[in-house]
Structures are given as structure tokens and as C-alpha cells.
Length: 90
Image (cartoon, rainbow, N blue to C red; front, side):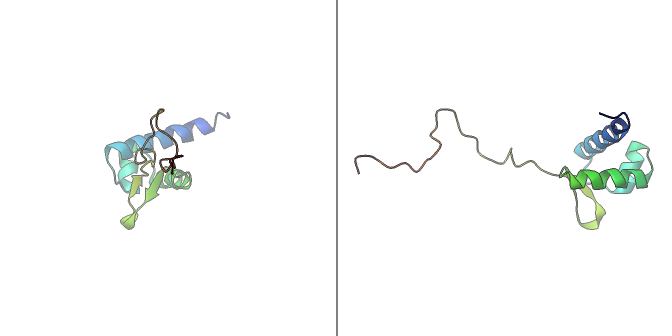
């Protein structure tokens, strides 16, 4: 991995952590919390949005994208994969 990717990844992680603590947030609020320039923060937010990690809502605020994994029911190892089985006696 090139060395120049590290600062961007660190900033992306910082944005995600900030949004975990205070979401939704505007670019100005994120820039103030991260002590960074708003244009730099906006560029990273756009990249995170393209990656599907955050989304921009009405009013220009950014929020974390909720994972679908937590909303999906999980199957137990003993449960059959198909709940609509037929009875061989029918």
C-alpha cells in the first residue's frame, strides 16, 4: 500500500468515528470536530459516500449508512435452509 493512502484512510476513519458519536453532521461541523479544512473533509465525505459508508441527507448533513446485516434474521446451524419443505407422506 502506498504511503500517501495512509493519511486519507486515517481521515476517513476519523470522519466515521465522528459520525458515530454525533450524527447527522454537516461538513462545517465535521471540519470543526476534526480541525481540518472543510474542502478536505468534503472530499473525503464524497469518497466515503461513493464507497457506501455514509450518505448525504436533506440539508447537506451526513450520516452513517446502516448495515443490512443487523436487520437480517440469522439462521441457526440446525435450522433447515428452506422453511417450505414438503412432507413425503403427502
